[in-house]
Length: 378
Image 1 (cartoon, rainbow, N blue to C red):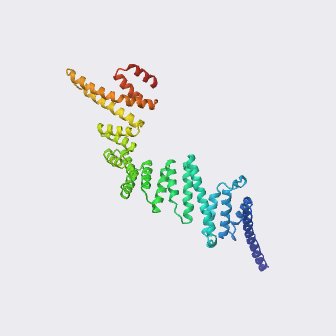
Image 2: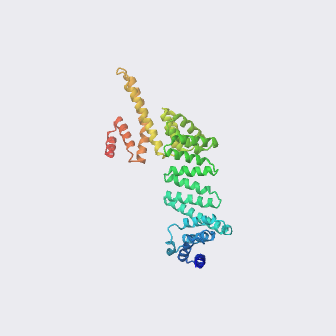
Image 3: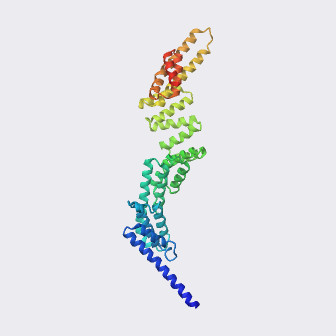
């Protein structure tokens, strides 16, 4: 009796095993006929049964089915899975891990590239719509899929970095850039991006270190030079920033942002003549550069304030000296006025400009103008 029972049990196992293989065949046939709902129903029965769960064919078929669910335009099939591309990828990945995958490799490789292409398109669409987190995730998926088939996709990783930057995800940007470096991909932009990401996380020490490392490799790269300059500016190293900006200007003499930054640094160092020169040069190239216009006007106002302070320190009995110094101050105010009025025209709502204009109008006894500004400031 015991022997008969054992034989019956073995027969039952064989029957069940045969049934699972039959389900896999049914899944494949439904797949071939475009009936992805039935194909899904039958293939899911096979991935947990001992007779089929460790065969590459099972997982490859499952990948094929879910890839078609991802690609179909038919809503009744689209709704079969929330994340069919990921399931297809995971299925092919499982198939590749099994010893009998050799004959299936060409088909799996082709379809893995299809998955990567679809993730890439998703990344582009998300990027263009402003969903940078989703874009970053999709581009990382591209790199993961390609990596599984032995391809290093640095373009996808660089796109993921760009999306991470726009998504304000500096920690993710650092991870992805480090991944690029680990893959022996090196470019000045990687070091610049890492420096910016470290700065965004408040880690200035690491930002300085990674920039220095990058500049050893790419000493002539402008972007990396400017990244280092920004760190110097942030950390209050005005002289180091100034040296870098002058080098940057030699490389790109028409860059108005560099000229503006030069002007602000010369301001910091109380070198009005060089600051004035830098702002004016920026405005020659870009006449509507609001910040340069405003700063040039403010520079003249500050000069006037300094001259008035000197005038006020002159003893009362030296009237001529006082009047001469006061006249110098008014020359500076006259220089400032057209720049600040132009700034006000460009941005009528900027309160700093209006407050400074009001001060000039008051000093020049232009009372009607004072009233106009007062009305706007209310």
